[in-house]
Image (cartoon, rainbow over all chains, first blue to last red; front, side):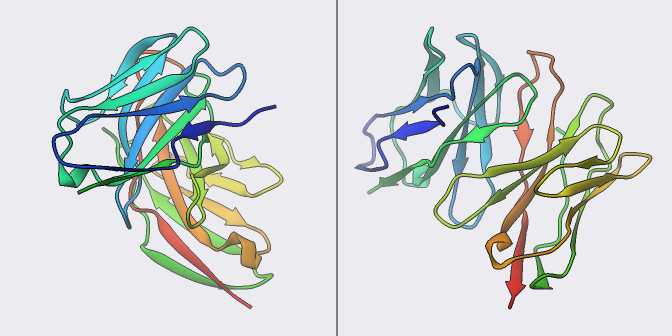
Length: 111
Length: 113
């Protein structure tokens, strides 16, 4: 059974740029959630996708957007990057409401 | 959103039991109580979850108060590998329109040899 994978591992961008982060869910899981984790804090929920549709969103602006594909993999896109977007971005796959399996995360640094 | 409250840090001696508390006074009837832990430089790892009854698995036990406003994660014999940040979160039900999981800042568990 393949676990949740994320790419890239690390990324450095400058303010104003756009970034796309990718996540492959665990086999069979149809739900993907994305989280932002700042240093020393708990993960903050960005949004969740279930069967290719967004079905829950946290307090993040519209420049945070996502996609889920028919194979249930997912992308997180962030436009107009700001310094405060520097964080670890975590992806988690699951069945709706059940335990989540997290990937190792993508460390994004915005300069 | 329903939120959870946990102590910032706790210490334990190796091979002793650890009781990690969590308050969730605004829990709704369809919220599941989940526990995750996070080691440095890793994503969170699922530990256990429950709805109303106490739960056991190979990693830990979860004791849920009768009114469901609090719960306790029990590690029966702490090892050095159990040193991590432990998060108690509320996970909405299987309703596909409710997908949020609200994490707090968790409890940092230190295990002393």
